[in-house]
Every structure is written in structure tokens, then in C-alpha cells.
Image (tube, rainbow, N blue to C red; front, side):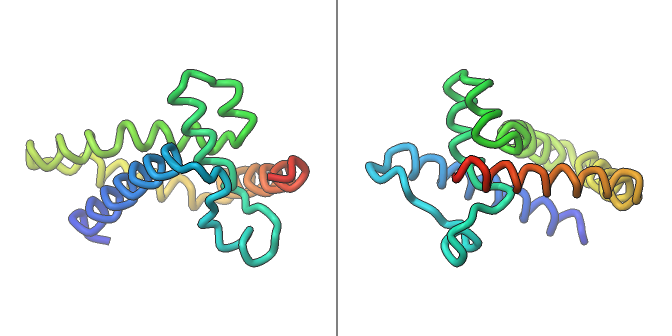
Length: 133
């Protein structure tokens, strides 16, 4: 993937996340769900609860955030850091985020890293089903 395409995708994802957080934060209906898995099957996906986790974290509730979904903490960090990192890269005509992304992708493709991460995702999914998110 080219640097520009990666940066565009990540920025669109971040700003879509901001927009979704804004919409759900001011919505009177707390049951807004765009999760296709949950809408189709009635069961939560591994990332269900991430929006509520991000909202809890932004309100200073670290424990509540973790209990909603630990992935929310990762999403929060990404939403805060990535747009600035990409902005600095673009302003300074560098590609540090692109290089870091490529290195991280190579690391995550290693079986000794990928398999434990897949197990964590499955365990989180089981936990989400158990919590009846």
C-alpha cells in the first residue's frame, strides 16, 4: 500500500471514529449499533463495547473503559496519536508513520506474535458474549 493511501485510510478511519463518538455521545438512544455481526446474529463481535470504552476513558474512567472492552483503550490511543503523527509527517515531508506501520505489519505476521494476539481476540469475544453486550 502506498504512503498516501495508508495516510488517507487512517485519517478517514480516525475522523469517522470522532464523528461516531460525537453522534453516540449526543444521541438519546443508547442502543445505536452499527455492528453488522450483532445486528445479524444477536451476538456481540470482539470489538463490541469499544465506543462505550472510549467514551468512558475520555471521561476519566479507566476501569470502566477496560470493563466495556480493552480494545477501547487501544482505539483511544490511536484516535489521539495517529492524526497528529500523520499531520507531522505530511508537514515535514517525512514518512515515519508509514515506516512504523510496515515494521509493525511485519512483526504481527510472525506466528509467535500473531497466534497469541488471535487468542486474545477470541478470549475478548467470549468475554463480550458472556457480558451480553
